[in-house]
Length: 292
Length: 338
Image 1 (cartoon, each protein chain N blue to C red):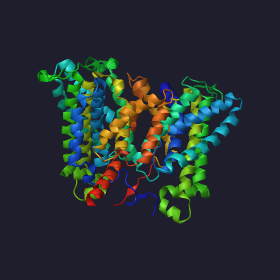
Image 2: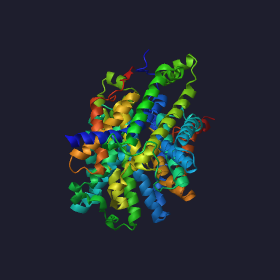
Image 3: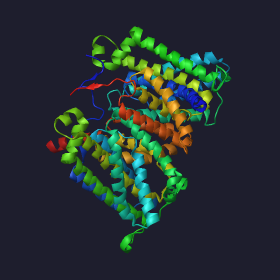
Image 4: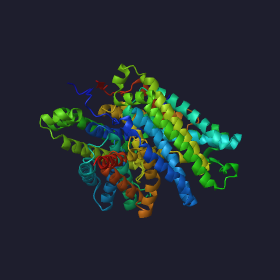
């Protein structure tokens, strides 16, 4: 029993990483209606920027804030320059665009900062949290920050004019335009916010997985899986999905014999798909009613 | 109106391509085929090998095109079926001494069954959810192939080495050229089959499902049957391509069939034009030659160069190579009229 509880705690700790990423994924899904494959690389690049700032002597929270602003503006710039011209292109072409962006950012980061693994500091320290060996203060801080972001997003979307406008632009662009919402800029704003949330995820994850250009690959896959599991329309679902995926993964690794690190991912994905087959819109997602 | 409704005016994920716009005219097709037949006489062995690979990947892209462009289902799991096909061929050739040509139908049938079965649970999913499910299949496949349980057959991480076939009947051509013609013959056969399939009753059912699933089922189309059938046919063709790939490369290993292959095939489909079958081969040329080109331009930044080239292509032709073909066709028509 103790092993079981410990594994669940460990699962929650890794789940926080996925939850963070899933939140960013859902954010951009709300704004542009599809998954951005370059999201992880954008977060990785932001994390490298913050690392560089710290190398130049900027204190942690200063670098954190500068990176947040940089990512926000960077996200908007990418949308304006690269994806606005593609707005009318078929969806699959846009997905190809995401893959191109992924390739560009990954390669550039590799050239600027090379592929060696770098240590990344944590603002929360890494001593055991409340005497538990499994969750460190960093992981607890990460969970706290993720929940804080979730709360912030909830208030933003629920109670601000801007949040309302963004929701309107995403759900019914035509009608939103008729009531005077600049839908094109709402999409850009969605990119900016997603990039900023992604950068927070990156900076929180980096102390755990170490900083290098490919650090986000696995995390993004789990992030997608978590977002889809929770239901792509629900930020709350994404966070819950993230924790569930973390717990799944740990329990699978502990209780199913012969499962090495390599088989963890396929089994976790298989479980998620089983859930999806039973509940096709994810755990907390809304069913989209289709009409002919 | 609540936000949870998706209007029919909302653009579908895959464009509706009329079936006549899915192929080239007979004259053009024969001209291209003639060029493909003559080329090996003038090319070096390495070029012939690359052309063989172009045809093989072209087949795999074609298979994805039938699935996505034809029936509107999206898959990132094609590499898994490609791997199954490749391993089927390799195992039959190396462990059971079966003739290489005979392994291909077996690979096709096994993959058809695998695809058909996978299509069953996938029926309940669509869009990103289906993408994730197929993605899971693609990531699981290399790991499954490495499992100790299958090692006597698959050779585990090491993979299997396949012997290259000689030209039969004492034909005076090299191994590479023979393999090229062999691949070409199979490609032509599958291409003709695919075009006829899409023109048939089943093909029309695929397209009806792609354009509007609810309307299609209202018209009496068995949506689940045709959706799984599309998965099966697509997987079967991919399996044949995989088998050919194993024979051409002479080697199969789990790590040759990662998600990267599936993504490449997807890019090939987009570059060639979703739903335009001849474009599959243009797309396959893109995924074979452009990464090499990018490597040639800059070693350290090859990924970035590749990304920029890809962006250029989709900026200039958001609908893929089909756009050029349509413009060309219009020009020819105008000249004919005047």
